[in-house]
Length: 352
Image 1 (cartoon, rainbow, N blue to C red):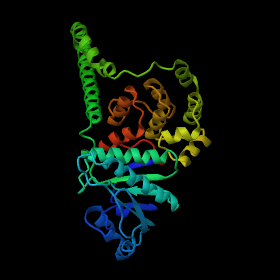
Image 2: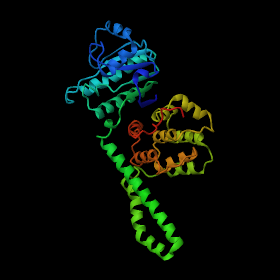
Image 3: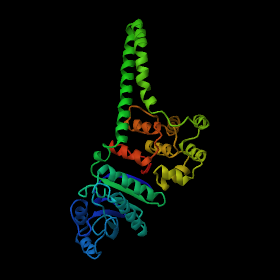
Image 4: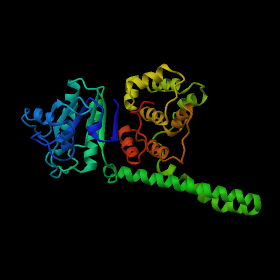
Protein backbone atom coordinates (compact mmCIF):
# COMPACT_ATOMS: atom_id res chain seq x y z
CA UNK A 1 0.00 0.00 0.00
CA UNK A 2 -0.96 2.61 -0.99
CA UNK A 3 -2.55 2.87 -4.43
CA UNK A 4 -2.85 6.14 -6.33
CA UNK A 5 -4.24 7.26 -9.69
CA UNK A 6 -2.02 9.93 -11.25
CA UNK A 7 -1.68 11.94 -14.44
CA UNK A 8 1.90 11.68 -15.58
CA UNK A 9 4.23 10.46 -18.30
CA UNK A 10 4.95 6.87 -17.32
CA UNK A 11 8.42 7.03 -18.90
CA UNK A 12 9.36 9.69 -16.33
CA UNK A 13 8.06 7.87 -13.25
CA UNK A 14 10.81 7.30 -10.66
CA UNK A 15 9.67 3.89 -9.51
CA UNK A 16 11.24 0.45 -9.28
CA UNK A 17 9.24 -0.85 -12.25
CA UNK A 18 6.95 0.50 -14.93
CA UNK A 19 4.55 -1.73 -16.81
CA UNK A 20 4.45 -1.67 -20.59
CA UNK A 21 1.19 -2.35 -22.43
CA UNK A 22 3.01 -4.38 -25.07
CA UNK A 23 2.01 -6.27 -28.18
CA UNK A 24 2.60 -10.05 -28.38
CA UNK A 25 5.93 -9.69 -30.19
CA UNK A 26 7.38 -7.45 -27.43
CA UNK A 27 9.25 -5.62 -30.20
CA UNK A 28 7.71 -2.21 -29.72
CA UNK A 29 4.76 -0.46 -31.29
CA UNK A 30 2.68 2.65 -30.92
CA UNK A 31 1.23 4.42 -27.90
CA UNK A 32 2.71 3.65 -24.49
CA UNK A 33 4.69 0.73 -25.93
CA UNK A 34 6.51 2.92 -28.42
CA UNK A 35 7.08 5.70 -25.91
CA UNK A 36 8.70 3.29 -23.44
CA UNK A 37 10.99 1.80 -26.09
CA UNK A 38 12.07 5.24 -27.27
CA UNK A 39 12.79 6.43 -23.74
CA UNK A 40 14.61 3.24 -22.71
CA UNK A 41 16.88 3.18 -25.77
CA UNK A 42 17.83 0.37 -28.18
CA UNK A 43 19.08 -1.98 -25.45
CA UNK A 44 15.50 -2.62 -24.37
CA UNK A 45 14.57 -3.89 -27.83
CA UNK A 46 17.65 -6.12 -27.90
CA UNK A 47 16.65 -7.78 -24.64
CA UNK A 48 13.02 -8.10 -25.75
CA UNK A 49 14.17 -9.98 -28.86
CA UNK A 50 15.48 -12.74 -26.62
CA UNK A 51 12.16 -13.31 -24.79
CA UNK A 52 10.22 -15.09 -27.53
CA UNK A 53 7.15 -12.85 -27.32
CA UNK A 54 4.35 -12.93 -24.75
CA UNK A 55 0.78 -14.26 -24.70
CA UNK A 56 -2.22 -12.12 -23.71
CA UNK A 57 -2.64 -12.04 -19.94
CA UNK A 58 0.99 -12.97 -19.27
CA UNK A 59 3.94 -10.76 -18.30
CA UNK A 60 7.72 -10.73 -18.75
CA UNK A 61 10.39 -8.48 -17.21
CA UNK A 62 13.44 -6.68 -18.60
CA UNK A 63 15.84 -4.01 -17.46
CA UNK A 64 14.84 -0.35 -17.62
CA UNK A 65 18.04 0.88 -19.33
CA UNK A 66 17.76 4.65 -19.89
CA UNK A 67 14.47 4.92 -18.00
CA UNK A 68 14.33 6.16 -14.38
CA UNK A 69 12.75 2.80 -13.53
CA UNK A 70 15.00 -0.19 -12.82
CA UNK A 71 12.70 -2.63 -14.61
CA UNK A 72 10.12 -2.73 -17.38
CA UNK A 73 7.39 -5.34 -17.00
CA UNK A 74 5.83 -6.16 -20.37
CA UNK A 75 2.26 -7.46 -20.41
CA UNK A 76 -0.09 -8.08 -23.33
CA UNK A 77 -3.67 -6.99 -22.81
CA UNK A 78 -6.72 -8.48 -24.54
CA UNK A 79 -8.28 -7.01 -27.65
CA UNK A 80 -11.90 -6.08 -26.97
CA UNK A 81 -14.40 -8.27 -28.83
CA UNK A 82 -17.54 -7.29 -26.95
CA UNK A 83 -16.74 -8.70 -23.52
CA UNK A 84 -17.85 -12.31 -24.08
CA UNK A 85 -14.46 -13.76 -24.96
CA UNK A 86 -12.69 -13.73 -21.62
CA UNK A 87 -11.44 -10.15 -21.94
CA UNK A 88 -12.02 -9.29 -18.27
CA UNK A 89 -10.20 -12.40 -17.04
CA UNK A 90 -7.25 -11.75 -19.35
CA UNK A 91 -7.03 -8.08 -18.34
CA UNK A 92 -7.16 -9.01 -14.65
CA UNK A 93 -4.36 -11.52 -15.27
CA UNK A 94 -2.23 -8.78 -16.84
CA UNK A 95 -2.28 -6.78 -13.61
CA UNK A 96 -1.90 -9.79 -11.33
CA UNK A 97 1.03 -11.36 -13.22
CA UNK A 98 2.77 -7.99 -13.52
CA UNK A 99 2.47 -7.41 -9.77
CA UNK A 100 3.71 -10.92 -9.03
CA UNK A 101 6.78 -10.29 -11.18
CA UNK A 102 7.39 -6.98 -9.43
CA UNK A 103 7.22 -8.62 -6.01
CA UNK A 104 9.49 -11.46 -7.10
CA UNK A 105 12.15 -8.93 -8.13
CA UNK A 106 11.97 -6.96 -4.88
CA UNK A 107 10.11 -3.95 -6.27
CA UNK A 108 8.46 -1.62 -3.78
CA UNK A 109 6.96 0.85 -6.27
CA UNK A 110 5.23 0.03 -9.58
CA UNK A 111 3.53 2.22 -12.19
CA UNK A 112 0.89 0.88 -14.61
CA UNK A 113 -0.61 2.45 -17.72
CA UNK A 114 -4.24 1.77 -18.58
CA UNK A 115 -3.86 -1.60 -20.30
CA UNK A 116 -6.00 -2.34 -23.40
CA UNK A 117 -7.90 0.97 -23.10
CA UNK A 118 -6.32 2.48 -26.22
CA UNK A 119 -5.95 0.81 -29.62
CA UNK A 120 -7.15 -2.54 -28.23
CA UNK A 121 -10.60 -1.00 -27.71
CA UNK A 122 -11.42 -2.01 -24.15
CA UNK A 123 -14.13 0.41 -22.88
CA UNK A 124 -12.31 2.94 -20.73
CA UNK A 125 -14.66 2.93 -17.75
CA UNK A 126 -14.64 -0.88 -17.63
CA UNK A 127 -10.85 -0.96 -18.05
CA UNK A 128 -10.54 1.40 -15.08
CA UNK A 129 -12.76 -0.82 -12.95
CA UNK A 130 -10.75 -3.95 -13.78
CA UNK A 131 -7.46 -2.16 -13.08
CA UNK A 132 -8.59 -0.82 -9.69
CA UNK A 133 -10.13 -4.14 -8.62
CA UNK A 134 -7.10 -6.21 -9.64
CA UNK A 135 -4.54 -3.88 -8.06
CA UNK A 136 -6.39 -3.37 -4.79
CA UNK A 137 -7.07 -7.09 -4.41
CA UNK A 138 -3.35 -7.79 -4.75
CA UNK A 139 -2.46 -5.04 -2.29
CA UNK A 140 -4.63 -6.63 0.39
CA UNK A 141 -1.86 -9.17 0.92
CA UNK A 142 1.27 -7.39 -0.36
CA UNK A 143 3.10 -4.26 0.72
CA UNK A 144 3.67 -2.27 -2.49
CA UNK A 145 3.02 1.26 -3.64
CA UNK A 146 1.23 1.17 -6.99
CA UNK A 147 0.45 4.02 -9.36
CA UNK A 148 -2.10 3.86 -12.17
CA UNK A 149 -0.92 6.43 -14.72
CA UNK A 150 -3.44 8.02 -17.07
CA UNK A 151 -3.30 11.00 -19.41
CA UNK A 152 -6.99 11.93 -19.57
CA UNK A 153 -9.61 11.23 -16.94
CA UNK A 154 -13.12 12.37 -17.86
CA UNK A 155 -13.97 9.40 -20.04
CA UNK A 156 -13.22 6.94 -17.26
CA UNK A 157 -16.13 8.11 -15.11
CA UNK A 158 -18.73 10.13 -16.94
CA UNK A 159 -20.62 7.05 -18.15
CA UNK A 160 -21.03 5.64 -14.64
CA UNK A 161 -24.19 6.03 -12.59
CA UNK A 162 -22.00 6.78 -9.57
CA UNK A 163 -20.59 9.87 -11.27
CA UNK A 164 -24.06 11.11 -12.18
CA UNK A 165 -25.27 10.59 -8.60
CA UNK A 166 -22.28 12.47 -7.16
CA UNK A 167 -22.73 15.34 -9.61
CA UNK A 168 -26.42 15.57 -8.74
CA UNK A 169 -25.58 15.68 -5.04
CA UNK A 170 -22.98 18.41 -5.59
CA UNK A 171 -25.53 20.43 -7.57
CA UNK A 172 -28.16 19.97 -4.84
CA UNK A 173 -25.83 21.05 -2.04
CA UNK A 174 -24.55 24.06 -3.98
CA UNK A 175 -28.15 25.04 -4.75
CA UNK A 176 -29.10 24.79 -1.08
CA UNK A 177 -26.06 26.84 -0.04
CA UNK A 178 -26.86 29.47 -2.69
CA UNK A 179 -30.48 29.78 -1.55
CA UNK A 180 -29.39 30.02 2.09
CA UNK A 181 -26.88 32.77 1.31
CA UNK A 182 -29.38 34.85 -0.66
CA UNK A 183 -32.12 34.44 1.93
CA UNK A 184 -29.84 35.46 4.79
CA UNK A 185 -28.58 38.53 2.93
CA UNK A 186 -32.11 39.65 2.12
CA UNK A 187 -33.27 39.06 5.70
CA UNK A 188 -30.35 41.07 7.03
CA UNK A 189 -31.20 44.05 4.81
CA UNK A 190 -34.89 43.92 5.72
CA UNK A 191 -34.32 43.73 9.45
CA UNK A 192 -32.39 46.99 9.19
CA UNK A 193 -35.04 48.76 7.10
CA UNK A 194 -38.46 47.15 7.56
CA UNK A 195 -38.99 44.79 10.48
CA UNK A 196 -42.53 43.78 9.46
CA UNK A 197 -41.37 42.96 5.91
CA UNK A 198 -38.60 40.83 7.35
CA UNK A 199 -41.11 38.91 9.47
CA UNK A 200 -43.39 38.44 6.45
CA UNK A 201 -40.44 37.16 4.41
CA UNK A 202 -39.54 34.67 7.12
CA UNK A 203 -43.05 33.31 7.08
CA UNK A 204 -43.27 33.17 3.27
CA UNK A 205 -39.85 31.72 2.53
CA UNK A 206 -39.08 29.76 5.64
CA UNK A 207 -40.81 26.58 4.54
CA UNK A 208 -39.29 26.78 1.05
CA UNK A 209 -35.80 27.31 2.42
CA UNK A 210 -36.21 24.45 4.87
CA UNK A 211 -37.27 22.07 2.08
CA UNK A 212 -34.31 23.00 -0.12
CA UNK A 213 -31.86 22.75 2.77
CA UNK A 214 -33.17 19.33 3.80
CA UNK A 215 -33.38 17.82 0.31
CA UNK A 216 -29.89 16.31 0.09
CA UNK A 217 -30.18 14.93 3.61
CA UNK A 218 -33.46 13.23 2.85
CA UNK A 219 -32.21 11.79 -0.42
CA UNK A 220 -28.98 10.49 1.04
CA UNK A 221 -29.78 9.42 4.58
CA UNK A 222 -27.10 7.62 6.60
CA UNK A 223 -27.25 3.86 6.31
CA UNK A 224 -27.24 3.32 10.09
CA UNK A 225 -28.16 5.19 13.27
CA UNK A 226 -25.32 7.11 14.97
CA UNK A 227 -23.28 5.18 17.51
CA UNK A 228 -24.15 7.39 20.51
CA UNK A 229 -21.43 6.14 22.84
CA UNK A 230 -18.78 6.71 20.17
CA UNK A 231 -20.05 10.23 19.43
CA UNK A 232 -20.03 11.08 23.13
CA UNK A 233 -16.44 9.89 23.41
CA UNK A 234 -15.40 12.04 20.47
CA UNK A 235 -17.18 15.15 21.78
CA UNK A 236 -16.06 14.99 25.39
CA UNK A 237 -12.44 13.98 25.13
CA UNK A 238 -9.73 16.62 24.97
CA UNK A 239 -7.39 14.23 23.22
CA UNK A 240 -5.93 15.16 19.87
CA UNK A 241 -6.34 13.49 16.51
CA UNK A 242 -3.72 10.78 17.04
CA UNK A 243 -5.04 9.55 20.38
CA UNK A 244 -8.64 9.77 19.21
CA UNK A 245 -7.81 7.75 16.09
CA UNK A 246 -6.19 4.99 18.16
CA UNK A 247 -9.24 4.82 20.41
CA UNK A 248 -11.51 4.62 17.39
CA UNK A 249 -9.49 1.73 15.98
CA UNK A 250 -9.92 -0.11 19.27
CA UNK A 251 -13.63 0.75 19.34
CA UNK A 252 -14.04 -0.79 15.89
CA UNK A 253 -12.07 -3.91 16.86
CA UNK A 254 -9.60 -3.37 14.02
CA UNK A 255 -5.88 -3.99 13.90
CA UNK A 256 -3.55 -1.15 12.94
CA UNK A 257 -2.77 -2.84 9.63
CA UNK A 258 -6.44 -3.29 8.78
CA UNK A 259 -7.07 0.37 9.49
CA UNK A 260 -4.21 1.92 7.52
CA UNK A 261 -4.70 -0.42 4.57
CA UNK A 262 -8.41 0.40 4.36
CA UNK A 263 -7.40 4.07 4.59
CA UNK A 264 -4.95 3.62 1.68
CA UNK A 265 -2.26 5.04 3.97
CA UNK A 266 1.39 4.08 4.01
CA UNK A 267 2.62 2.12 7.04
CA UNK A 268 5.33 4.71 7.71
CA UNK A 269 2.80 7.53 7.84
CA UNK A 270 0.62 5.55 10.22
CA UNK A 271 3.63 4.98 12.48
CA UNK A 272 4.22 8.75 12.60
CA UNK A 273 0.62 9.34 13.60
CA UNK A 274 0.69 6.66 16.29
CA UNK A 275 3.98 7.81 17.83
CA UNK A 276 3.18 11.54 17.89
CA UNK A 277 0.15 12.61 19.99
CA UNK A 278 0.46 16.13 18.55
CA UNK A 279 0.47 14.96 14.91
CA UNK A 280 -1.42 17.31 12.55
CA UNK A 281 -2.75 15.40 9.53
CA UNK A 282 -4.00 16.81 6.25
CA UNK A 283 -7.74 16.91 5.67
CA UNK A 284 -7.64 14.09 3.06
CA UNK A 285 -5.82 11.91 5.61
CA UNK A 286 -8.54 12.54 8.20
CA UNK A 287 -11.21 11.63 5.67
CA UNK A 288 -9.24 8.53 4.69
CA UNK A 289 -9.39 7.24 8.26
CA UNK A 290 -13.05 8.20 8.56
CA UNK A 291 -13.74 6.03 5.51
CA UNK A 292 -11.56 3.21 6.81
CA UNK A 293 -13.41 3.23 10.15
CA UNK A 294 -16.80 3.59 8.41
CA UNK A 295 -17.71 6.61 10.52
CA UNK A 296 -21.09 8.21 9.97
CA UNK A 297 -21.33 11.91 9.14
CA UNK A 298 -21.59 13.11 12.73
CA UNK A 299 -18.60 11.01 13.78
CA UNK A 300 -16.63 12.22 10.76
CA UNK A 301 -17.28 15.84 11.68
CA UNK A 302 -16.00 15.19 15.19
CA UNK A 303 -12.85 13.48 13.92
CA UNK A 304 -12.24 16.42 11.56
CA UNK A 305 -12.61 18.76 14.52
CA UNK A 306 -9.90 16.86 16.40
CA UNK A 307 -7.52 17.75 13.55
CA UNK A 308 -8.66 21.38 13.39
CA UNK A 309 -10.96 21.04 10.36
CA UNK A 310 -14.67 21.43 9.65
CA UNK A 311 -16.95 20.07 6.95
CA UNK A 312 -17.76 22.88 4.52
CA UNK A 313 -20.40 23.10 1.80
CA UNK A 314 -18.24 25.68 0.05
CA UNK A 315 -15.72 22.91 -0.72
CA UNK A 316 -16.49 20.47 -3.54
CA UNK A 317 -14.00 18.04 -1.95
CA UNK A 318 -16.01 18.05 1.30
CA UNK A 319 -19.30 17.68 -0.55
CA UNK A 320 -18.06 14.62 -2.42
CA UNK A 321 -16.94 12.98 0.81
CA UNK A 322 -20.25 13.88 2.45
CA UNK A 323 -22.09 12.16 -0.40
CA UNK A 324 -20.18 8.91 0.02
CA UNK A 325 -20.51 8.89 3.81
CA UNK A 326 -24.23 9.70 3.72
CA UNK A 327 -24.84 6.94 1.20
CA UNK A 328 -22.81 4.42 3.21
CA UNK A 329 -20.28 3.84 0.41
CA UNK A 330 -16.87 3.39 2.07
CA UNK A 331 -14.97 2.04 -0.94
CA UNK A 332 -11.93 4.31 -0.76
CA UNK A 333 -10.75 3.47 -4.27
CA UNK A 334 -14.14 4.26 -5.78
CA UNK A 335 -14.10 7.54 -3.84
CA UNK A 336 -10.64 8.28 -5.23
CA UNK A 337 -11.82 7.66 -8.78
CA UNK A 338 -14.42 10.41 -8.31
CA UNK A 339 -11.95 12.75 -6.60
CA UNK A 340 -9.49 12.17 -9.43
CA UNK A 341 -12.12 13.13 -11.98
CA UNK A 342 -12.71 16.43 -10.17
CA UNK A 343 -8.96 17.13 -9.80
CA UNK A 344 -9.23 16.84 -6.03
CA UNK A 345 -6.64 15.44 -3.59
CA UNK A 346 -6.97 11.67 -3.21
CA UNK A 347 -7.58 9.94 0.10
CA UNK A 348 -4.54 8.33 1.68
CA UNK A 349 -1.55 7.64 -0.54
CA UNK A 350 0.22 10.86 0.45
CA UNK A 351 2.83 11.83 3.01
CA UNK A 352 0.56 13.68 5.44
